[in-house]
Amino acid sequence: MLATALVSGLGLGSIYGLIALGFTLTFAVSGTVNFAQGSSVMLGAVICHALAVGMHWPMIAAAPAALAACAIWGLIVERIAVRPFVTRGTNSWLMATVALGIVLDNLVMVLFGKEPRALPSVLADEPWVIGKIGIFPLQLLIPAVGLGLALLVHAGMHRTGLGLKLRAAVDHPDAARLMSIDVTMLIAVTYAAAALLAGIGGILIAPLYNVAYDMGTLFGIKAFAVAILGGLTNPWGVVVAGLAYGLVEACATTWLGSSSTQIVTFTAVIAALALAPSGLFGGRTKVRV
Image: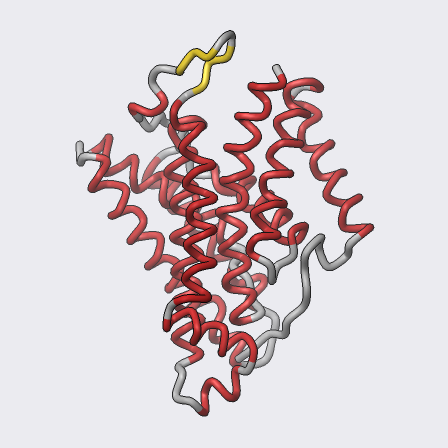
């Protein structure tokens, strides 16, 4: 039971950390977050299902197409629900991103239907039996992908020209503008990247948890809790917090039952934040126009 809980917890925690990295990216650059991030999880899974199952595309083509749609969705969120309000100096983007996510969820419900659907995957068909434990290959792939992408984000921020521009926009936005760095464009790019990361999470988790129009709601809430817990400005802190959250959730489900899972995990989050209000590894930043 412990081994099963650990495998499940690491997989879930990696997904939470992956989605939460999107919150970290947008907050670090603009001081804003996309509360429609959970909808990006759902969008990636739904479009991948529609292409792979409905239109019989090979997964190697369906997944990139779904991720491209997620990136475009991120750009739409930034342009429609964030930029106009931040430019005016208001915090109305908080409600605007929530509202836009609800619109997308319900639009998908109309087009896709209410019933959950399975997304077939060769990595989730037959478990590998190790001793008395059955582990799907996908459960091992998810943590590897999650940690690999976290490393890629870190390397991109520190070792690429775009990353240097992003860090300049974070540290000194006014100076970055004087150096002809388009801060507005960089913010839009981070929103696209955040939605893409969430879409990857949705595609990875869909074969294990099915595809549904409302699947992103709880994932988004949990990922935001992870982002706050890890510290919105610390990518590696967010990843560590995601893994810890996933392990606590899996252990609570295994030993106390699914009815107690959310009680235990969110109580743990509240207790941790009571000790570290800015997150375990966090700092602060300001909203930037």
